[in-house]
Length: 233
Image 1 (cartoon, rainbow, N blue to C red):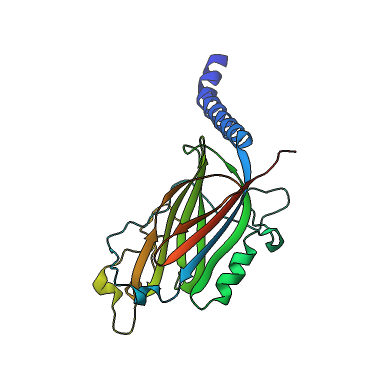
Image 2: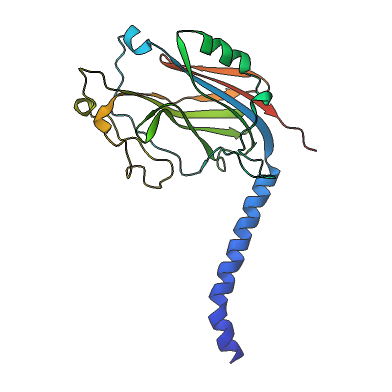
């Protein structure tokens, strides 16, 4: 009878043990990671599309990584990826200068704290900002921070704009805009994707040093990022 009972319970015990082990490994990886304060500012160059003759390819792939995290205003005690108050921003002067100019438009500016792990375990942070375009926004995508010998940044951003009066997005066959809340990147798109006139992407990899301001340039947008180590208490 005891052997029969053990045989019935064994698969459940093995599953429970495996779950506990995986949670423990994840917790250890999380705890062993170095923590950083991250501040990111993304801006758009106004009039850039009209000022250049550059033709952007419309066969681009828009996709969110499987491992992803959202910034949040969060509850007490949950500090990872929690949005920090503006009083902690160190790029406020750059924000002010860009907003005062008629040539730029700030799309995203946030600061948060997060653990930075190896590339294998790194999760991507969802970025979104600018004007609303149906179910989406002008700026969407993600950034990924990882560390080996140096800090590494990988940008996976796209900037969408509506079609002009004499322009049809449907004729250009622009890709559908993915939904980061879904596992299937093709299941939800803009309510009327024909309204999208063009999409430009910012996909770059950059090796960085902490406590240094880094700038990633693009003909139609720019990204400023400052990463500062957090001293362990």
